[in-house]
Image (cartoon, rainbow, N blue to C red):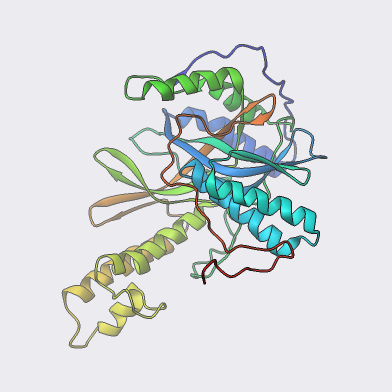
Length: 367
């Protein structure tokens, strides 16, 4: 990646506000200290979501589907579902339902990155996901002021906010000094170097001119595994560090034992490494498999017992909770959409049954 200079032409002014409220001031002090511990910016690549702008929203766009999709078509499919369910459940006007279903039909057969329906603009939004390294070769972890629950809830059905819940992208919203510094530092971030295809580098340079500003999305948290080649995401992103820890606990006790044949896939949903190891203890089934399940359970117990545990060693691997970030490039018409060089891993397709103009599901042709 390259950090070239971006000219002043076309850039929006930033309103900088110094926080005075105690909690917000602590967060700002934490953010101001972070660069002293930071190493390189590591860019993972683009992610995609859906945003909407109503007639009274001004320059603001509301995020409807989290900007976390791995390719543009995943976000288009999310928009397809959003519009289909709106037509089915939320609309009582035939003309509006027809407009929504017409948009759904386009999304079923075309790679559509922007639609206007009933006074609302919908756009597939592109963001760049990145993280920061720290001394010793690790990734930046959760900061002391990142939100944490007062009492950690480890239950499998625990609910919390999802990534980008109720997020509004507002280019004119005041920012703190630390946020302003980070935005200015990242304005010129672009793909450079021979390992990137020429069309990727060209699109990246054009984005600097067409979308000269950046907006920073709220931090997210990802479980990563350290290997000789660097860091590999295991799951995430999550809205909080605790949600990422809970996901790692689920992997250790439920998912990985099934993937590795220690627990049958058709076992009861409540069966996990803890219950299976306890059930096998002292029986004829106790043996290497039960011992390995005990190791999985013990690793999960270490994750739970240490409070805010952000690093765990298990079976020769190192797992960490990484603080991941995303930036959206911004131009005169709002957030950047997919670039021509962005790769889709799937094609448009029909995702839902046909509806009539009264919102009734139609039988399949020939059914």
